[in-house]
Structure formats: C-alpha cells, structure tokens
Length: 216
Image (cartoon, rainbow, N blue to C red; front, side, top):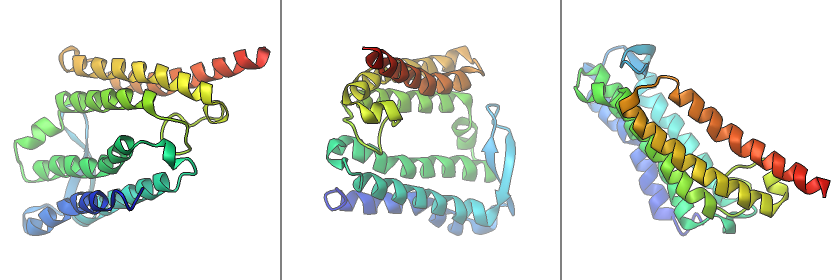
C-alpha cells in the first residue's frame, strides 16, 4: 500500500511542512507570542511561542501524518481498506496543516483571511464537508483494525460492522448537512451535540445489534 502511494505520501509530507517555509520567510514580521487557538468570534484564547507556532505545529502534524500512513498500511486487514479511503487518510493532516497555518499566520500578520478562516462560517462549512465525505466512505469500508468505527462488537462480527457503518454513513451525511445549515442558524451548541451523536449513536446501535444476536 505504501509503495503504491509513495509519490502521494512524499507530496503530502512536503505540503504538511510548507507552513514552516512561510514562517521562516516571515520570521521577523511574526510576534514572539502567536495566537494558536480561537473562539467562534475570532478572538484569540490560546497562545504559543513563535518557535512552536512556526516549527512545532507542522512537525507535530507531520508525525501524526506518518503514524496514520504507516499504521493503516500495516493493518492486518489493510486489503479491506480501499485506495480512495487511504488517499483520504493521507490528505487529512496536510490539509489541517495548511488551514491552521492560514488562520495562525493570517491573525499574526493582520491579514483579512484570518477573519474568515477563524469564523463560525468557515468552521461549520469545513466540518460539514468532512462529515459528508466520511458519510459517503464509511458504508463502503470493510472490516479492518484502523479505519472506521472500531469497537469490540463491530470487530468481532462482520455483519455488525457492515450494519453499523451503513447507519453511520447516513448519520454523518445528516450531521454534515446540519453543520452547513448552521452557517445560517448560528447555534453554538451544534458542534458539541453533533460530535456526541456521531460517536454515541453508532456505538449504541452496534451494542444493540450485539445484544439482540446473543439473545437468539
């Protein structure tokens, strides 16, 4: 799997580290302490040193990226993970690195892009897109140990896995649509409720399927 996607892995590693180059080129224009966390009103509520913001974050994301790439590739059931799903996994951290860098550098340099990147509008659109993409891929994901809803009941029963992931697919698409609608509704509780539902509902459903099957 790694050999087949070697070029893409190399490209995504470079993309993940690109913010370092931008930070070094603009080092003298960046403040000693940089905002690295923002609330929905685009107000900074978390700060880090310039060194960590420029070097630490991209390197951390690169480490996470490589762990995801290699952990998925050595999964005992990696043949059940489609190439499309693997490519999606490969691109998650690089995109996060670019998005985080745009928000952090934009805020530090006073760029108008920061206002949009850290806005509730962008967060809801991004979360909605992520959930819709995941919802389309999950029902096609066959049983494995790395990607999907990996709990004891899905891992021990292929039918449980398939039915749970079909439910999760529909659920995630609905959650994605709700996030997009929230760009107009502005419900501050939407993120927390949707995340709890995204985790809790598939887990409970899988457990119910397991208990029903054991009663027979």
